[in-house]
Length: 314
Image (cartoon, rainbow, N blue to C red; front, side, top):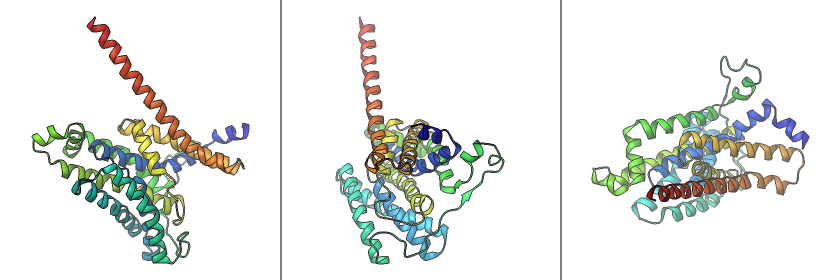
């Protein structure tokens, strides 16, 4: 226990925490945009899986990081396009559609990898390119802080910038106002001329792009290449982080960091030869506990308001 605590209180752990938070944060920001419009994107896991696969194969075949990222986003948007088609145009239940697309992505990613590379396990047969790491001028020379904040993959910085992007989109733009209006009361929004289907379509596309960047990070930053099941539930953890943050960017960032901390701790425990079955549980147990806490807190707030209303009425 003392060894674990001594490692947690280091700059290396802080660096690792920000690194593993990256895909969770991208997924969480994507969830906020979609949920704010009333169109739940349960297919975040599928977005990330396809993006990770397409990014690895795209960068390997084109020999370009830039085109690898573009292909990764395009791959993730395939899932978004299917979700939009089923949920908005065929009027199927969007939650069930998202679950079905996650299942499709899980098996489809392996099928496509076999068709293209004749390999069912990973993309090790081709050389996948990795997005560059960036040293922050001025910050990299600061003791401890520089070791934590500087030298990350460029997509890690994009993930934290996405918090600002989502906040600005939702609260400072006309599109963001329309997204929130549709999410809060679709009928009222339609009565003033807002096109509900178009707003939800754009929201799901933006959500898909953000989730796809998280998937691209996994195969072009966190690891060098794609392997089956590499997303490991991070899309669902992103959904939980957005729920804990009540669809607000900054609280969701804090929730994502909590889950990232749990993920980083599980990596440390794995290195310390703690039983693998226990280590793999940590991120998911943290997710469940977090949802229980936020649910209990919301219930307490509702009860408090009801009691206050009764007191004032009497």
